[in-house]
Amino acid sequence: MNEGLPQAPASVADDSGEPRFGTYQGGLDAVDLSRLGAAHRPSLAMRPLKHKRWLYSFIATAEVVALQAVADLTYTSNAFTLVVDLKDKRVLIDEGWLGLPGPFAKVSNQPGAGLSVRFTHPAAELAAWRPSSDDRYHVSARVGPRVPLLKPKLELEASLLAAGAPPPLTVIAPVGGDGTVNVTMKWAAMLAFGNLWAKGKRFVLDGGVGGLDYTHGYLARHTAWRWGFMCGRLADGSPVGLNLVEGFNETRSDVNENALWLGGKLYPLGRARFTWNKDDPMQPWRVETTDGRVSLDFQPIGAHREERDLKVVKSHFVQPVGLFHGFVVVNGEKHLVKDVPGVTEDQDILW
Image (cartoon, rainbow, N blue to C red; front, top):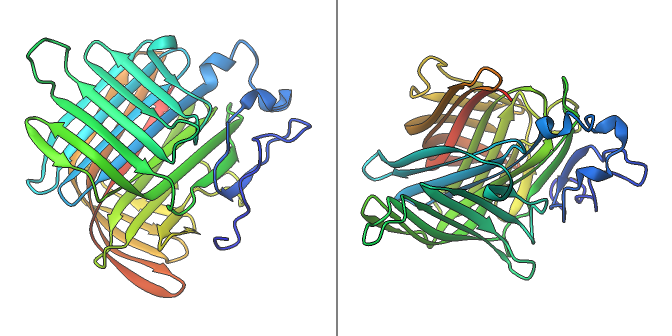
């Protein structure tokens, strides 16, 4: 048991169709929104506009950070990948794509065993999967056109080990505005393995630390948040992970996706607060929790940005990648955080 968090339920909704709102340890076998009662589902006409699913993966070693995301928005899709060389303090790969829906971009209903994610584009192929009998999540990416004898910009073949890792955090939350229900599973401090080739450089990912963000729900047309995610090792080599959000999944006191993973355990945290220069997100960020258990500064190295105005759909999205410094507190003991890789994020989207 981890600080009293109940185990994740068998399904998002109970037999009467009521969502099982709350914060849990462990994962759902499937996120089946069709079991929600009519009061918690958009109308049939609006459902394709509200239904969003995405998977985000993050892997870091002392040398490199590799991250990627695939978003299945039902009526369209997008994806991006970013690779940062931590030794040279420079971005090696920063690519993003809008894509078609349907067979070209898909995120399955299974956040754990059975997960299947893919994004296909003329310039990129991204995928993630976890077979039902496998204790690992697998992540792959290839960026660059398939031209004989031409080496791609990026090739990634990696895995994240679920077995032996501290449990994931699952949140089932009501959504304000014109949304209804959102489900997210965050998982950090997982051991990473694999290989990465980026811009002619090869990185071995064995011994790295990583995590996932699986999110699936009926979201409001206007959605905004600040996010922080960290995966790495403390000075003694212990894997550590952190997930913080402000402005999202916090509509009730019993829903809260702020959590710390350390020493093989999951620790829920208080509400998160972010301080940053919105006009220049490459300046340092300040990240804290209201319970005093997280006090961190974040220094960006690079960032992925998306500024789109398609009239009906508009998005402001910036995700700096860099290093966290400061401390976290567990059971009254202060643990120093130094040069631990992670991201922050400022997102404001009309979709």
